[in-house]
Image 1: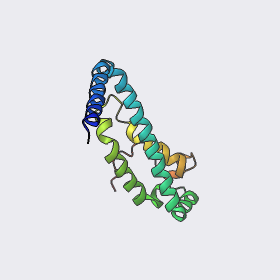
Image 2 (image 1 turned 45 degrees about the horizontal axis):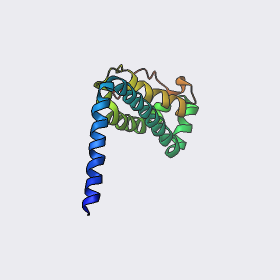
Image 3 (image 1 turned 90 degrees about the vertical axis):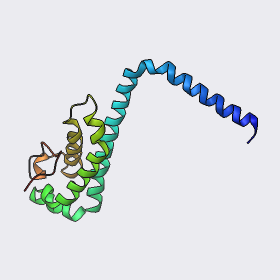
Image 4 (image 1 turned 180 degrees about the horizontal axis):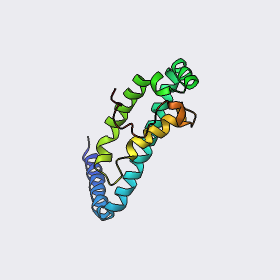
Length: 136
């Protein structure tokens, strides 16, 4: 590696450091943007997870739709998806100013929209709090 390449890499590093130091005063604004991005990511991940459940479990889903008990028909899949979702987002939401209920709310909303075609009654139970798996 030539001396010129090393100097260019060093200069880019210095520029990035200066940019960071100048913009750190705008931390609260960037924190809100970061929260917004994580919220969007949580919503997107919840939707993709629900779509994945629908895609790989068509027969069970149709049975659940017919009997208005989607949760019972897909309990294992939904609980596994919830665990992945909480594992991915729980730390951020518990350390942010966002209300804790938003985390399971995004997941629940997407389950209802994607699996139950927007009709919560088709889930077969009230899904006000899917933050933890229901206890038998």
